[in-house]
Image: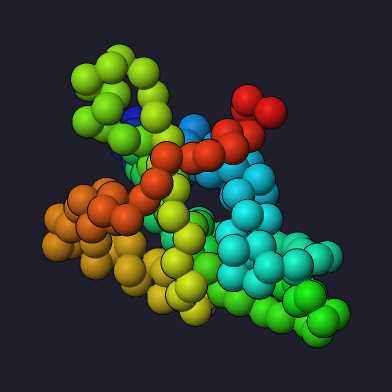
Length: 152
């Protein structure tokens, strides 16, 4: 009986650890968004200032793509407070990686309202259930990162 309990405990612990898998691309995306956001906001609102990111959350992540969401707050050129929600897509260009052997990161900002935590969880479940390729659906409009955070 003790062995069955121990086995059950070990399986539960393994499941808990495997459900919390960490992907390094998420760390990179969280660093890169801090560098790239300024250019994004400047292209939307030339002359903007005093920007900051709030409520940065991971919507989806695997080994080759990370989708983050956040709210950006800033002042426009007239000093008025502005708020925009963003979905940030950060991914590895797998084709270029295969061809050149080098890792090339791409990114895109989309002005999309932030999702509540429960809806994020539901979306993740649905992606897994349907076998969707978030990478294939997101790749199309991404551009090569212009100012990599690790090359400044």
